[in-house]
Image (cartoon, rainbow, N blue to C red; front, top):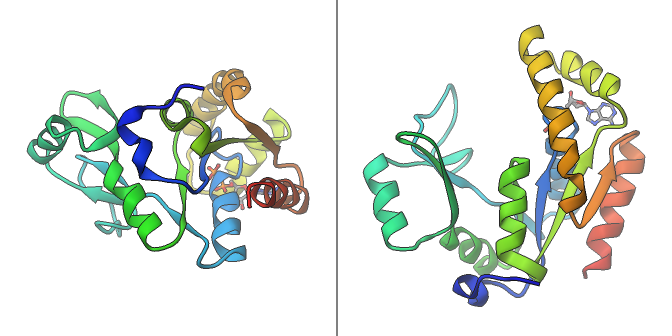
Length: 197
Ligand code: ADP
C-alpha cells in the first residue's frame, strides 16, 4: 500500500477518517466515539482561509488563517494535504495536527468530505482506517435532512444529488457503516474500533 514517506514518522496509532454524504449521520457517529471513549480520540481541526461564521472559534471548528500564512505553510511543506477550492479559499490539514493529538496520547479522528477522505487515506496508507457512513436509502437521507431543520429545500435537493455521486466512491473505503438504526450503526463502529486495539 502506498504511504507518503514525508509523514511516515508521524504516527503509530490508528487514525480514523470519516466521510459521508451530508445528512448520513457522520457527526452523530463521530460524537458517539468521542463520548463512548473519552480520552481516546480527538477530532483533527483543519485550517481554512475563509472567515469564521457565527459562533465559530479559532482552534475549534477550524484554524482560521490568512491566505499569506496558508501559502507560507504550503511552501514550508507543513500540510499533509490541502485544497484550493477557488482563488484565495484554501482548506487543509497540518501535519502538526496529528502530532499534537498523538502527543496528548489520543487517536486522531478526521471528519472530512469524500474526496478529502480518499486523499488522506492514500497518503496515510495502513496507518488509517477510512470509514464511509452510508444512509439506508436516499428517501431516508431526505427525511433526516428535513428533520435536522437547518437546510433549505433547494439545498436538500442539491445534497441529495451530490449524495448519489458520493456513494459511487464508497468502494474506495476500508469500511462501510450503514446508518439504519443508531444502535446498529454504533455496534458496527464499535466493532471496527475494537478490531484495531
Ligand atoms: P452529517 O454529519 O452526516 O451531515 P448528522 O449526524 O447531522 O449527519 O445526521 C443528520 C440528521 O439525522 C440529524 O438530525 C441526526 O440526529 C439524524 N440521524 C442520524 N443518524 C440517525 C439514525 N440512525 N436514525 C435516525 N436519525 C438519525
